Amino acid sequence: MVIVFQTKPALLAGAAAVGPLEARSVFRSYFDIVADDERFQEKTNEQGQRRLITNTCQHVMDKAKIKNLDVDYFLSGDLINQMTPTNFAARELAVSFIGMFSACATSISSVIVAGLLTELGASKLAIAGASSQHNATERQFRYPVDYGAQKPATAQWTVTAAGYALVGQYQPDFPYMVAATVGKVIDYHETDPFHMGGAMAPAAYDTIKRHLQHRKQKISDYDMVMTGDLGKIGLKLVKAMLAEDGIKNDELQLIRDAGAEFYGDDQAFQAGASGAGCSAAVYYSYVLSQFMTGRFKRVLLVATGALLSPLSYQQGETIPCTAHAIEIAMN
Amino acid sequence: MYTFIFAFLVGGAICAIGQLLMDVGKLTPAHTLSTLVVAGAILDGFGLYEPLIDFAGAGATVPITSFGNSLTHGALAEAEKHGLVGVVTGMFEVTSSGISAAIIFGFIAALIFHSKGKVN
Image (cartoon, rainbow over all chains, first blue to last red):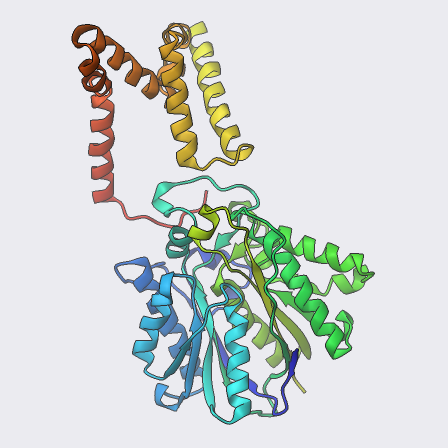
């Protein structure tokens, strides 16, 4: 059930681009592009998201000093119907493309597949990651921002952000993929789309637990376990579930959440950040940079996704969730 | 002076009910709006909304419940003159200014402004 990579595919470069509100993020200094226009000078939000994706991918290629012709695969997804921002961005990138949807867990599922393609020898260089744009996603899942609907305190703020990583064959001076756990779909019968953290926490718990069991590891074997966008409430729930299994406080402190930390303690963003771009931007900028500076030697990244559609919750369905994990290490 | 206090209390109470419908009742904003309009219409049907306006002034006329009140009011007034047809024509007679204003100002705002993901 756990994928153990034999050839240690490496994360050779990463980049993140964000919108203007994300300039208020605690991770701001790690982001490569901070735009002052959330539509990136395009006419619509969806076109802006496409530009967000292509800009970030271009930045990844610039960092690695390669061109799109050098890239074998583009693996990516977003939260919009039929994933048109990603599909249209792939049209510009012009490389072999697999669109992937695991909601906000796409930031990790795309990199897992990139790692497998690399291990198979099918890909020398692949770009993998995910993105989200606030206005487009709010309209897709909740209300158009023009509507000005109130949000409860458990709601999270969909970020305008994209994060992409360049995955290639093992090289000694770069972080590499050790193992990955693909999530099951778990449903604890949460029905409130304004309480995603609570819905997703059981999926994160299940994936973390299965990964540690199969790898015969403890949380303290890692420098950090970082979930994707559980937010402040979801993070507390995961810790509470792990504490019930007898995991002690000093180990629980190693668990962090990109969404909970993203906007710091700013109450305007309710329970924290969310969106496929939230975990992707933090993982492929902040986390990779901490490997390069030597602060991290081994981390577990666990991106969570809520697999609902607007129609499914209007029809009274509960919110099924998943979580994909990848173990990254560096010599 | 008392007019201001009663307007504040009654208007605030109506809005508090709306907030509770959303937070506790888990109604969507659209459902909350419709519920309050219907509540205003029913209250006027029993002749209870006009005394509330006399008591609280703008506290009762500004919230959306007064739109329901106007719908019933217009329908009943025209029904007296023209019978059943009056119910249909009268409903929008009193409320037409409000509806037209909403459309016109909404149109103007849409021309001038572009939506943004602004924080509270």
